[in-house]
Length: 153
Image (cartoon, rainbow, N blue to C red; front, side, top):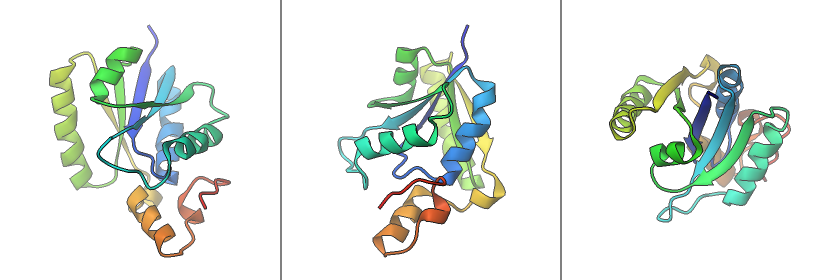
């Protein structure tokens, strides 16, 4: 049976931290779906179509990585595509507490799905999409924080 994982998030925008997690997860799974969660109540900073384009460009060299969108519960999406793993990154102990709670609820909702945590590498532990958006909003240079070669603005 194929080991299929879902890496859910807004990826608004994709950061070097996200890229690091995906590239480190690739050897462990047969297929990884980078799943952009769509929330009708929340407008993204960048259009979903742009985020899809960027993710496809960054991971074009990895045939086992696919980008998709979904709405609703992540475990429902996992069920739909046959994924048994959810990949999440942990930067801080606060992330751990938050992600642990979600992982435990997901386990109750769908016992066949395991959450797999990847520790963020030290150089990306302070990096968030929110910080990158703030840098852009205030006219700063986001290039050190996004995948090499990616142009957001």
